[in-house]
Image (cartoon, rainbow, N blue to C red; front, side, top):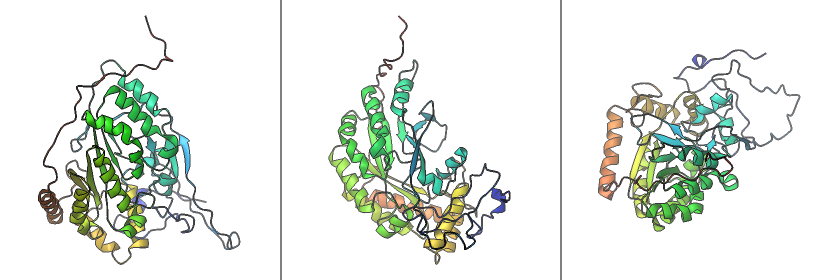
Length: 376
């Protein structure tokens, strides 16, 4: 019989704990190692093989499933003082890219699912997203401001090839001449160059490609189903060549793992046309800290303790600091040095010399859904 478990049973300082691990062959190509229960669940369940059943059988590979998301709206509002937007859209819940560091993983706990392997294999698609967006933009009194895509999950993750929800939303925004920004790791965004280039001519779009490392091995381990570093650079080149302003987000920076690559990443991205850049220090909220530690022990056992020690040095001795103004950058000597390195490299290369706010004056509310009755 399963025993109750809570987050307090897992000390923040340990790198090892009894977790519901999944066999390596079953999770090949995935980021997380375990399928821990969501924090709102009263029990944790762990599969056990007593040696009599399935001993000689290969574990079945973990399959990706997609279910419909029944949300009745798509625009999420926020009042966070340290982000440059007040509204965002995520066409999908969960993300198949499987980035182990993803700070959005804990949102799967709200669905009664694991922030670990469930987050990257049990996905939800907002199938009515374009229609809901059209409805919200057409509401009387709506005031346009940049809508940010990719703030939690990647709008161009693999299932977008089939569902095309992001493309449908772009069509609505282009019709309404509404400004937007996109953060992605995927080359799939180049599929929509036709719409994005039209928006760019009206100063209605900015794109950032997230580049975490130039090392293909590190990327394959840390972001198993995202585009390779070379592919991301090519994406940046293609978008900029099409007149779509595309910059780079060096995110997240992980001390003792990829922080030494910052200057190299910025230089490589400048060479392919990026002229704006930013960075974010790794964040480890709620379940992410445990999942990340598990991943470190399996993939970088020689550096695991050192990496966590350096993260804590930038977080006042804790694994995470969610305080506005500090959560993205950290604090302390090492955090200050990281910020200085970024500023100097960006200045030397020529990043962030111009800041052109996107226009909102062109906005035209879209036509209401013709299936709705109109009052005469």
